[in-house]
Image (cartoon, rainbow, N blue to C red):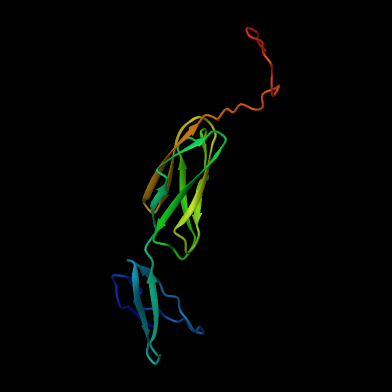
Length: 171
């Protein structure tokens, strides 16, 4: 069997294959080179030509990681949004690297669902300070600066709820 790609700038195919004796098919290798579509045609003596449309999808990269900086209170959770481009037909795993796990809790990766461009990333402030969370995918990298703020101190209910104080006296 002989094979040819209609556009070798998009995809190439192995030039020939042999169907082993007693078999009815052979495996061929098609290699995507650039985003786009092309047709692979197979021919052989005494056989009807067959075609296969190949869609080569561009590798995704990170197009945004927002907001560029985030303040989160110690013990609280904050949310970031990761965006990839182009949208992929399969789930895409993005690696996350945390510069200071003692200050910030963050997942090691996040999965952008098939057919989606975005996914949220939840982080939690552990200890007061600064950490950088970097997202990496196919050679692209975007970072977010996360500032972990001290916990908010709140005054609870004062007891007693009311008090009478004479001039010059203390309660």
